[in-house]
Length: 172
Image (cartoon, rainbow, N blue to C red):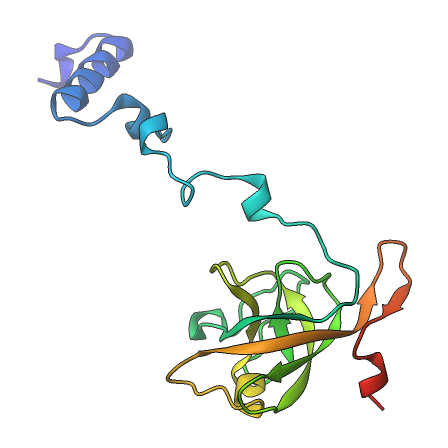
């Protein structure tokens, strides 16, 4: 049976024919999705995957979430390991190295974080927080998401200098 196909080309053609008769697109089998199967969630859109950095230092409001437990000990975008008990946080738009004040708008509790990672990649969320920081500002672990204000204290600029953010006066 194995010697039935004398050339690799013939074997490939037979395999593609079998896949097609089974309803599997050769494009999908090869790893390329046909246009009809492409959705915003599967398409790599540069505007979605890499938003522009915001070095303005202005306050922003949105939802904060907790880092998933599976990220503990994993390497973050700045090369450091994610520490659930640290002050590390993730933002899609704040430059790495930014220090910011995160305030829970329901409780009024605040904490200072350092942006060391990218994310969260869920619509409406502007920051992912370590478990310790979330607890410090009163985010219930069961709920995991709450509305916050993220106000930069110090924002690293592209030229290596640091710009004072809107919360710079709030920190002693």
